[in-house]
Length: 137
Image (cartoon, rainbow, N blue to C red):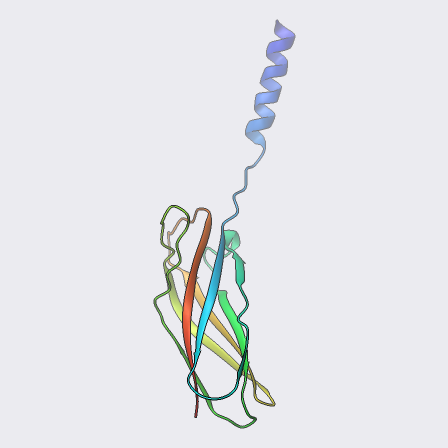
């Protein structure tokens, strides 16, 4: 009986000491409306592991596009993202901003960066979308 109790105690202690880790992810899609001319490289379906980004800025979405060299490109996006998990919990992002890099030869790399609002607890897999409008001037 003592041996059984000792084994159960050791087993329970080892189970309690093992750390459980949860993974929180977000899948975001882009809808990009081309106002005039040029081609769009299909937006990446960004899968972001949010377990480690609770306090830091992360890239929520990225895509690239190609215009004629020297063409001025203006990109805007809807600040209201609709990111929800399976339970309907909404992910609140703050400080959303656009990062656009002209790679030369008319190629542009575009990223939408943001940060989770302080104190927000995330659970599960989030899905949603951003809408970007691209104008060639």
